[in-house]
Amino acid sequence: MLLTSANPSETLVQTATLLFPSLAVAFAFRAGLFNIGAEGQLVIGGLFAGIVGAQLSLGPASIPLILLAGLVGGGVWGAIAGIIRSRWEGNEIIATLMLTFLADLLANYLLSSPLRIADAVGSETPLIARSAWLPTMFPHSRLTLALPIGLALAFFLRFLFTRTVIGYELRAVGDAPEAARRAGIDPKRIAFPALAMSGAIAGLGGATIVDGILHRFNTELSPGYGFIAIAVALVGSLEPVQIIAASFLFGALQNGALELQMQAHIPKEIVTCLEGLLIVVLAARRRFSTSAAASA
Amino acid sequence: MSSASLVGTLLSLTFIKAAPLIYAALGGTLCERAGILNIALEGTLTVSAFAAALGALATGNVLFGAATGIAAAVLFGMFLGLATTRFNVDHIVAGIGLNILAQGATAAALVLIFGQPGTSPEVPSSLGQHGEVALIIIALLLSLLLDRALMRTPWGLRVRACGENPLAVRSAGLDPRAIRLGATLLGSAIVGLGGVYLSLGELNVYSDGMTAGRGFIALAAIILGRWTPLGACGAALLFGAFSALQFILQRAGIPSELMQAIPYLVTLAAISGIGGKARPPAADGVPLEAP
Image (cartoon, rainbow over all chains, first blue to last red; front, side, top):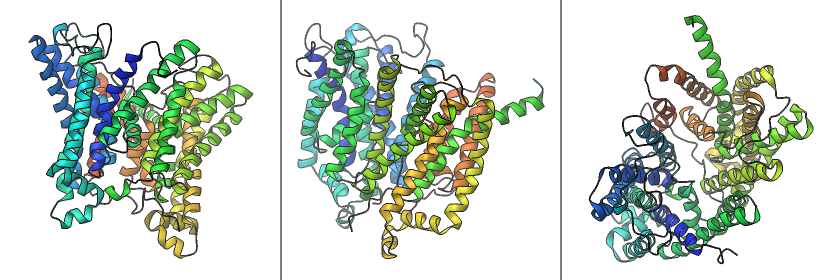
């Protein structure tokens, strides 16, 4: 029933939304870093995109700038955790988690005081001009270019990991920090760019939600995509192209949850339960650990 | 308002706000000293607050409700304990999964049991003000008790050894997995008291999102308290004081978001080594290989 839903393209909308933070989590993981704050990076990316989008009136030329703003916002938020990890050897798990709550507070603060613009209502930035919206792929669909952008990003990341020096260094640090150190790669130095990149990917995802779906930043931007993304990244074995399939699976679950609620009056949170259980069970199956990375 | 009564109000508000944080931070400290990195504190609070309200509503007996809340917390802790000690699930991943599970399960149960999303019906007989004060005093006494138990008893030594060097515990002929599981169950029961406090003490209703991130602020209190029960209690009181001050400083033009951000900012500073580096137990979150 998940695939015969009344609105199958809605599954693809969810797929695209989950793809970005999932790739972000996987990116950091491959470098031996556990970014559990993709949620916060996504929010800051969306916030930056919303602020920039509301100011610009360049027509379609605004679109890349809005996406870039998201990339930068998420990147900055990831980079803060990166500095804490690289410079002071602070635990990135705690850092990214705390930064997630700080992201929400920053968004609330900026929307309630200095940024409040005449036509902004409560917890939202003003609407982005229609000509600057991320184009949809089909008429009457919410599916936007976010999907092809995410797919391209996944293949690019696969290329990066398997065919480039920086990708090799990231993986070396993640798989065998001691061996990497002896080969002259400094695991501490890698943490900064790795977390900044990871944050940028999540931030780009936030920008695609803002410019593609909401057309403004709203503090209700994400119902926890950044946390579900950890499950998606695990199901996708941290491999970018497999993560596309995993995002589709979870996208179908999320869309199915809404259908269940609407048609069978089964609370959609049942699916949230299922996702939580899946995370624990899958982690038991995969038997991987963050502690090796944390002690690196 | 006179300044004396203002100070009194602030003090009592500090304890009211700190109590659930103290319980969650104490429970979390116990888990972490045993080597179980418990980031499911938020989920434990949610589940126990919900179960406490449910138990009290079902029987009309508030003490039964409290017991239900604690039992639910222990059951929830058992998931974490078994996943991490028996199935080698990464502690962080298990915690995230359980937090999502708790959020989904309570929201779905609200609809399925009470037929309404968002909040439970009001509990007719909550613990009342006396109960609330009693739970605050118990929280403070428990901090002292747990500190002594952890630092001065053979049991405490074993728990701490599991958090520092579980292999040494095994060499001594003890089972570190059993000790870790036991600490997780007891720790979760303590966190459960915090959940009971929320739905039967401070309020007399369960509503979605009522834990409001307290489980994560408790994580911050654990770090700031340097993984000791008294330290965690002190940090929780400090955070409670900030949240009490929020009401006054907001009127003075200081944004409430800044006050709410303090626990998180302080934690970032603590893990970055500002004011002395915060070091967790050596084997905190480190899984045990099968013997």
